[in-house]
Length: 261
Image 1: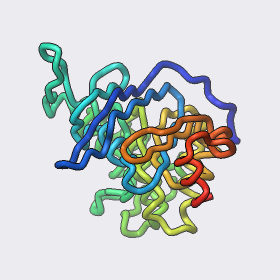
Image 2: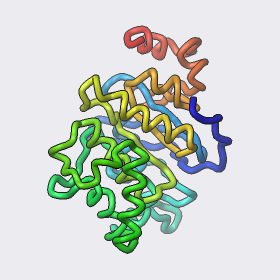
Image 3: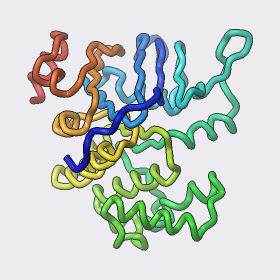
């Protein structure tokens, strides 16, 4: 490891009894989870267990049907009125999202913009950072993810791993309190997965608060402070990596790990 484990601070993300339905299908069944400042939490589980839906609810990309989610002590996507939650305004939700960085399975870069322009776009347009400062900070971030020599390169000329690292730099450019990763290596060729995971491990060791949905068990072992197992829309087990991988308590966790380790 490149650094000592960071000291955990206040609760950054608090999900309480979160429910989500798609029609008659209940995808999240009362999910509760706290994540503290500087903590890296990895969420694992089988396909269809609700992992991606939960992480999208944290950013209000999916609306919840019950419970509540707070980031930095502020409700996400909703406000209270007469003791009930009502959906917030688009402007308020957009402001809340500036506190939450999101890295998707697919990179979602602007193809007509260089790597540098992809990273500077949101700070300039959303935060009002001047172009010179935004460019300087973007260069530092691209260097941080190992792409300092690719500032003027368009996404189409970058490998999948390089595009995902640009996407990480773009999310970091907003100086978020929380970073969300939704299976960030699942769309990558095996030979470039390592370069993305190395950047994420470095962020974890530096103390970035992160929630990572992943199938990369090596990353979860190395970088996570806690591992969360989801199954059938519920959290069924939570624990530090050493306990989780060597002595899981829930039979479903043991079954799942036996098939992938």
